[in-house]
Length: 417
Image 1 (cartoon, helix red, strand yellow):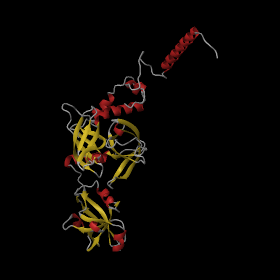
Image 2 (cartoon, helix red, strand yellow; image 1 turned 180 degrees about the horizontal axis):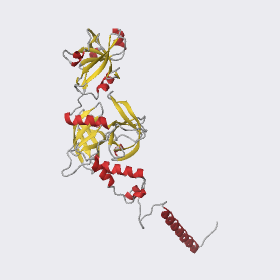
Image 3 (spheres, one colour; image 1 turned 90 degrees about the vertical axis):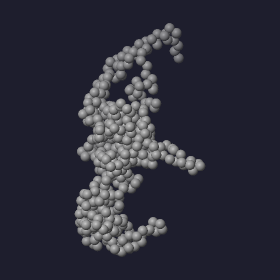
């Protein structure tokens, strides 16, 4: 072991400091390290640290032209410090974040004394789509809610009311009263018809309560039919690898111009957290549904005005039918559109089911096997085939009458919700 005197130690330290300073200056000059203001101290929880990537845990809309104008007005101290992709992300987030809201609900529970008490319900995200305070989100976010609260980017919270709910597409429209003198930021609708696999998309939401979180990814697949918890099928869902977690539900999926092209709805996961497979409702579906919810408070859908029974093995075997899949026409109402189109109901009354669930159905009628070219084997298929059809529309249906296949054109009635 070699020993040094006090003066030698001081000299060595001074030389080391000088060399270190020179090395740092050289690195900063080369652009490898970012230059800092002299004497500046960066703390772990400070904005400066966050900027450097240090992890911390602490309708009547704005026009697209305005959105583009805002994007062009992004103030970045030194844009050369960011890649084109990063600038794109920054622009989209800057223009859309104030239009993304945090939605929390209150439900009614039962305490130990069997008394109804308020309790915390679900939470999720939503998008302001109209400066009058209209918000679009998922219907499951506000399910069973007795009170709904909408939290804005400025920290203010407002009570929301339900304008309309469409469980078949998991869409709901809320309304809150904007603060006086304020102008709400809105997210413009895009077009989901021309999306392509591989296209970059961005999501903003409130995963696990961390408000207005941005994640990016791509369109992984298109046209996915997904069955919901209500046993309805949402058609043409957008699949994305953009990170979507609990709390993102109802938030916007955006294109690189900041336009909404989907509503984030669900994930495929064994753990309940993001596994790289998320699904969004296409915005073209949302535009149609939202318009009707605001106008009528519900979505008006077409229906075949007849009593239909889903076939199964028991019914098919008992009635000696040529198929066990499809919808048996049990009864057709007198004077209905279905009767005028020539649809035939059954004539043999039988009791079907057991206990309190038994009912009388009629055998011998037509069996619906397709609607507008879409195969119909179950009631879920039936509702899916007519989901976007309006009352008054005429559709072609295919039926089995005995063993003969017949095509009929039926004018749709309005389905009772």
